[in-house]
Length: 362
Image (cartoon, rainbow, N blue to C red):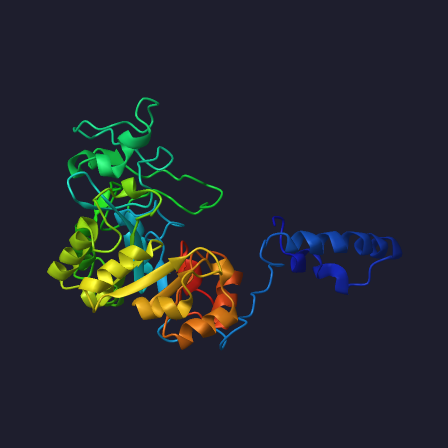
């Protein structure tokens, strides 16, 4: 406000004015006071919402609660890319959740969809290798499936596009400290190596490095019984296929058995792994409240975790799972109200696109 303060403008009010002056000041004074208040836009800011669980200022997350960054941190960075995983690590998630496909030359590639979709990826202008263009109508369908592309061809793509800005309004493709502008497709080996490098980087805090040194990996095998061509490795539904064996071999090579979880909607993939690898943890994904087989059977077959759609979770199902010895990790929970509800019900962790929101609950 210009022209002096309210105090300066009203300093003469303690003198005895004549009747006309007094009436004039009674008219002007309210407007002067209103003008003084408009200089601070926070004068009438909404009060802070008090936490509904736990003491004021403390996180409501129970001890040992598993915060899983879905596809890294899809709500913040383009999914399943190094910057997305770096963003999740920066926040201090306890688990990096990711998806795996199999390339034509047997590489384990991190991606959710069975093919390269133009809503998420395009050809990198700097690429020198020839590969099908997802933006061209000529190259669609099977030509863009990972199972029909080599790991070398995948280097031609850049996956920094937001497929749904309404669902992911906070997602951005800006560079991160360590990954920089690398929004290329990555292999499982590259992610393991990146997390190891992160744990030793002086660019990160001590707490971030220590967390990266123990962070878990929740790896989903993207098999679908009705679409065997997605992986197309000759899997017989009983014995582990080349896909599962490649995952187990890499985990063994990196010494990460105690930090890896393997999950799948195709439970045949899980039981095949359990038949040849006792220590590794398995997570059975389900789509509805009607679990088939029942929760007790999932545990008997070798699952350690039940991972349902969060909308299907009830207190009774959580109790059933816990009685069977299963941890409960619902997906994909992005609304703080849903997060609070599930925590109150007693889930053991949450898979979320927005680990920042989950970890800031108070």
